Image 1 (tube, rainbow, N blue to C red):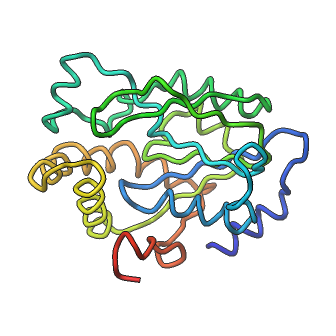
Image 2 (image 1 turned 60 degrees about the vertical axis):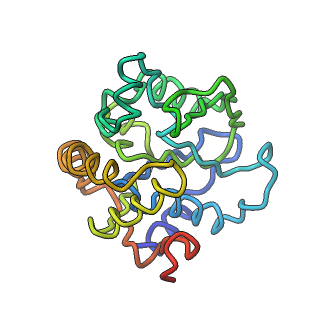
Amino acid sequence: MAGDSEQRLEEQGQPSGGEPFLIGVSGGTASGKSSVCSKIVQLLGQNEVDYRQKQVVIVSQDSFYRVLTSEQKSKALKGQFNFDHPDAFDNELIVKTLKEITEGKTVQIPVYDFVSHSRKEETVTVYPADVVLFEGILAFYSQEVRDLFRMKLFVDTDADTRLSRRVLRDISERGRDLEQILSQYITFVKPAFEEFCLPVSMGNDTHKCRKCLFPWPAHQTGAF
């Protein structure tokens, strides 16, 4: 699969001064989407390029979580808000931003704080690039967004591996406790993956990335 995707990228070409090549990358929670995107950036020789001159950039759907009300934030802090539902994302802003990217415009990407469950005041500037990777658990859910992608990759990782990675990540990076993580997974994460993520990711035009081809970084699992 990795070879097929790399070959297709080369065949399609990296537009120079034309419309950016927009790639959608989806998969379940902690499936390795960010690792796949980083690997693509590395393979295309862009990992050490200054961010203002990068021709391959990554945009995360996680940046586009909606601004929560006080009541919603209170639920979120207790692990009782569903961040895996399509309504948790600002889809209008996603569509607007991706369309501006395809038009070759410089865009401002929101920054989301997963500890306080709030959108920060600062933004990240993304300059025009030849290849743009948009990754997220529901990157393929919206038809309007899906139609913008010129290539779609689904990171196919088994459920046990994804859950173990999520536990390690949320404890170390987001200050969550194990009980809350498991409760969220059973109540929200697993059902949302089966209802909203998996069905729209099984199209014939979607390439599967197996975890063995894009292994999780060793420092995050201690297994590689």
